[in-house]
Image 1 (cartoon, rainbow, N blue to C red):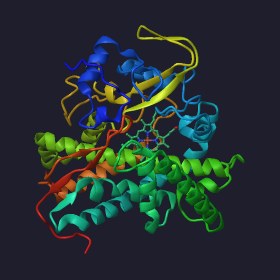
Image 2: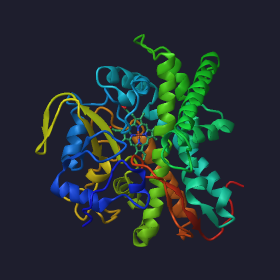
Image 3: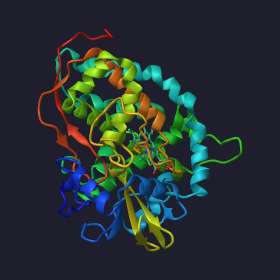
Length: 408
Ligand code: HEM
């Protein structure tokens, strides 16, 4: 087992793969371990067992998202102040109010209505590559679906959606040289996104349409509204949270199927396994690897004595391979059941708002891939994103038997 010290905040630690052996070592020896050699981070606790991760996620009074935000970087006070206006970085009761308002617009019906559109968009994407018989799976297929869906949900005109892609890449792929060359580029991208959102909201107010952003600009029945700044920040949150995560799940899952062709074959033969397979893809890939909290009081966690004010980072990616919860956790088994993974969170107040939408996108995408490209294979090396936060893939060359377009 790999036991040499690894810096979990160094993007390069994740450049070849997620260090699962090292996480297994931490779970076995010190599931809540003090880390003071992980530059550029300040010293922090790494929480790696399923049980402790769930506790950190649920017990928001002890482990708060607010003081230093949920993000693992140690930002300036000025940046923290701005990010604290985003739902992801709030605690109840502010978070509860925000989430209630957003939930009113983000209805199950709105998500269901997207389903038909999802099928068409997926067919369009596959039509763009099917005659050639080759593609970059990430750029041509996995990245496009979530991008189009979020753009449609928010009422962003079709021709502007790649601006969103570039802005969110510049912000999230902050450490990856392909997406970002300096800290300023990330900040400029965020400013441009705010300006764009502000402009979009004034258009929605003067010309309301049937989309989430229009719904959000309206006064709710109980008289509560979101301020302009809150609306812009929600737009930014969705642009990042809805794109990178789903894209990397779809890409990571395809990559996993390439390494486990027997599991692909199972699905080719029996499509009824797909809903179960989606849960296993979420567990096995875990696109969001970790989040941060701040201890609000002295607290004991699996034998570790955490002090008030300490930085606490909990690893969904490790919890999802915890051998005390999952039998043979490193085996990708699409028939696994039960599967209490925490890819969308561990049941705390911030449980992923887009979980049902994401599940639907993944399901539709794989349904169409299985139908139209059952012999899809890897045709070149996988290139990973360098990030200690997102388990991401930037490129996977693929090939498949060419076929005719289905949408004429
Ligand atoms: C496979 C895809 C996705 C994964 C793995 C994922 C993962 C997560 C995780 C781990 C959290 C934090 C949960 C917690 O701390 O309890 C979260 C929160 C969130 N997600 Fe997702 N997500 C995905 C897709 C989406 C999509 C498609 C959307 C929007 C359309 C979205 C919107 C959000 C928002 C707004 C939050 C913050 C919720 C809050 O603070 O109350 N996510 N997501």
